[in-house]
Image 1 (cartoon, rainbow, N blue to C red):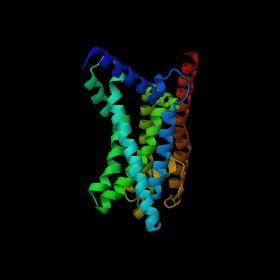
Image 2 (image 1 turned 60 degrees about the horizontal axis):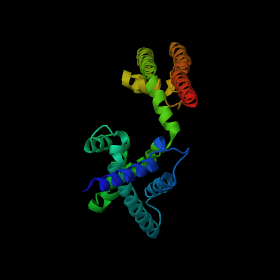
Image 3 (image 1 turned 90 degrees about the vertical axis):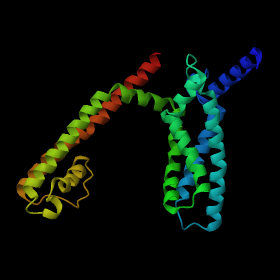
Image 4 (image 1 turned 90 degrees about the horizontal axis):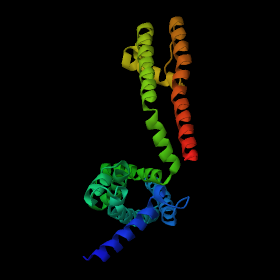
Length: 260
């Protein structure tokens, strides 16, 4: 291949890269190609959800299968194109280095998983495998993340406050253990079927700490109710902490983006 041909191919590859990657586009907003891909992803997610209903007429299920096959072809072509333009992600690295990095990146793995889940039914008729495949197809919606600047900002926000999140998780886990251990000691002898062990009491702690409150398990002794009230009140604050940290980090990320 002569030098001029190689330059033309590289120039075309760059144009395709800018068309598919919102972060490097000169214009604001999504390209027409990405808008069409979003439409395809939404249709694919809907068909994957509908495909799990066995009571639909046979004809409808057949048509859903045809739609799935067509969408699978679109996703396969998209994956191949993204693999081809992957070197543009970092021009300082070699072409194959960039492609390998794309394959093992989060978005690359999602793309590959979607393609595999689409073509797998052709090679397997196992019912259990097909049920898993139908579930995996719903991961197509995760492909929308690469097309949203808000998702990228959210990802950066979470990463910037990762230590605060980890500390909050430790607090929450500690409170779960304290609550379940306390109720095991207090209620274990009275309600052995519900609080007869720490793992059993842990279910109550999770439901209470997350403020869900199913009502299927609850303390009946006076001391147990006092401890439960304390755990519930403290739990509200523990659950609210991650939301506050995330909101502050996301606000900072968006403010920095506006300033840039």
